[in-house]
Image (cartoon, rainbow, N blue to C red; front, side, top):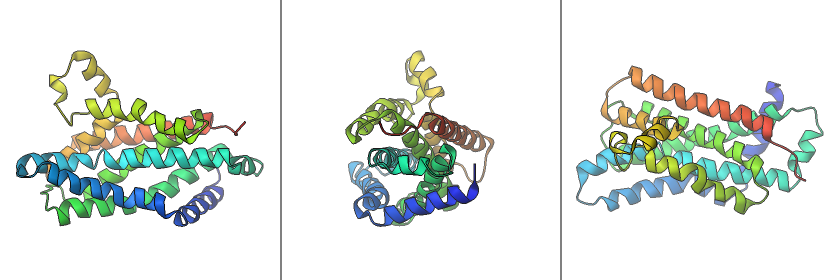
Length: 244
């Protein structure tokens, strides 16, 4: 790993994203719009809305960054950019970490905007404050970025990259505890939820919304999600390949 090469890769990705307004709109404004939409879905049910809304910050950033990262990385392969990069003295890990760093910088802006919508615009009470909510959203987006980089190695078209969304994200969404507490699920689904990272991302946002300050449970949730993300990034560095 070479930090300078990682930085150069990240800078190139950020410059490329700056010229793609549709992707920036998907990253920055779609999550905010969905958060506002949830407000009107639970119109007149303020208690339910206040409970559900923070949990969405453990889901929307993850899902959006998964989709954007997987498609963008695949496009790098299919257009030959990855082939050209691999002819230079930069390893796969430099490439993967450069992409991760670039998308994490974008995710930080996304998390700040989404947290402002939740706390400032929609006036949702968050016991732990805006700082930890932004941190939780960034960690969630980091996981989505890592998963997107990983699955892009197994797709040959953008349509195939999108097909990974219902395979990887939707089962976690259904079992993460958003719709029903995990204790009330079938035992097999409880076991599945216990090993899936989105579960801990949602748990972290739930603790941030309901408990003031830091807690051991929040530490555990952050560590698990970050460990999953770093592990998936390493797998991505191993599996990513040139376009045939």
